[in-house]
Length: 95
Image 1: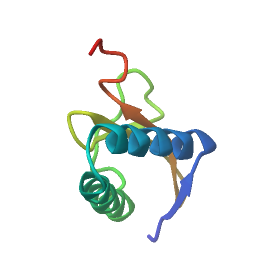
Image 2: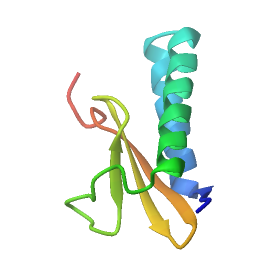
Image 3: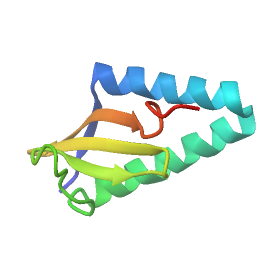
């Protein structure tokens, strides 16, 4: 079955926040690396939507850990994968 990928408005905002965070702390090289890693992760999700575990906090969502800093939450509905949220795991930590 071929799955379509849809981004929620929130996940687009989250992505922009993550990229801005990387740009502020690192360089364009790290931004490119993050985008490539995210692209590979999304391809995996599209090819194998049930590969990643169900979220414990919301059983309607699946949780794909991209890195120790970033987690992608998505929902599978029929033949569509909805990216619900991209979570910056360390966002609330005191630096």
